[in-house]
Amino acid sequence: MVYADHAATTAVSDKALAAMLPYLKEQYGNPSGIYRLGRAARQALDQARETVAKAIGAQANEIYFTGGGSEADNWALKGAAELKKEKGRHIITTQIEHHALLNTAHYLEEQGFEVTYLPVDQLGRISLKAVENAIREDTILISVMTANNEIGTIQPIAEIGALAREKGILFHTDAVQAVGHIPVNVEEMQVDFLSLSGHKFGGPKGVGVLYVRKGVRLPALIQGGGQEKGIRGGTENVAGFVGMAAALEEAVSNLAENEAKVAALRERLVDGLLKIPFSALTGDPINRLPGIASFVFECVEGESMVMMLDAKGICASSGSACSSGSLDPSHVLMAIGLLHEVSHGSLRLSLGADNTEEDVDYILEQLPSVIARLREMSPLWEEKQKEVQ
Ligand SMILES: *Cc1c(COP(=O)(O)O)cnc(C)c1O
Image 1 (cartoon, rainbow, N blue to C red):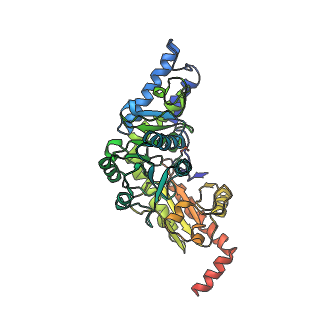
Image 2 (image 1 turned 135 degrees about the horizontal axis):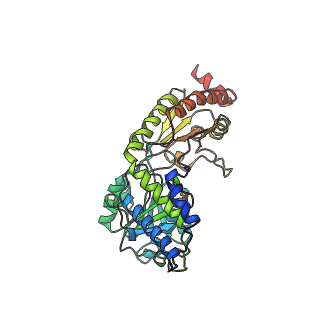
Image 3 (image 1 turned 120 degrees about the vertical axis):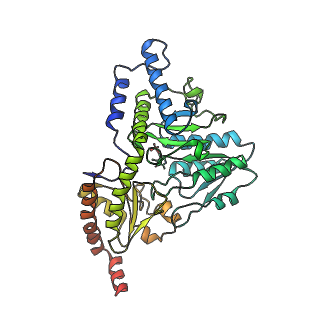
């Protein structure tokens, strides 16, 4: 099997698994317990917090463990809105955020907040000027993702951070696709909140982090025992957080090496696939994540490509007609200005450090014939051929 869907999730790394196992079995203590077994779990949790903090340039007391990236995004937005609602009710974000962010913004609109969704250019970049122009007296929060999960475009976060700080506006970034893949530092980015998720860099699913800058008094997400300084109650997922920290430490220590390796694989893939007629790469060709190669192929249907690739043992995904059964193409492909019919042929291949040149060559061998077969069956393709002649 060739796994080319690392932006969706990754396998737990060997190191992360090995780090987790003791905390599922022998070291099963509750970190709140004051006997030795509990203290051992507490120590592991503290260590995991230190490790995560170090990986993103934060302090351990700014790290809040969560149940994943979606939870971190929800908490940052709803928390900031609650915290600042007396000051104002205007929030700025972008049209290409992950649904965890967008749907939380929609929820806040229902609660009486006003949200500006900034457009992006054809490469998926937002402009600093657009952010600046959108800022109002009553703006309380700006939220811009570090890197996009569908097209891989990286945003100018540090510049937006500097602007937000100058204006005294809280700034959140969803860095779920970035952490563990490109350098991420909360000081350089000048963020107040940052979301990350364990399963996008070799940690387990269902664990994540919300970084909260020291001094920002984020309201509680879950009332309960005193866990996470009393703002996210519930017995901690010790093994999960330990596994996430181990995976992050590993990813960050191999970052430059993996970045170069994965980017080279992506280049090989992109060069090969752009030879297919009526194909295009989406996203920014320069400011992009190393692993995501996102394409559109005219006159084919994304989901059919994914199914046929699956039959060849290749895991990929498409931003077209999503699993919800809706026929609408992804909001990201619409935001970069693709025509409806073109965006239906979207295919995202996302590579990781565990992929090989052989994997890429296998995709290059299989995908052109998959596309050719689908096009043979497509009335649109027939039309297109006539046009060309
Ligand atoms: C995967 C992802 C999320 C959601 O993270 P979960 O841990 O799966 O909840 C949020 N934002 C982005 C950009 C993602 O890629």
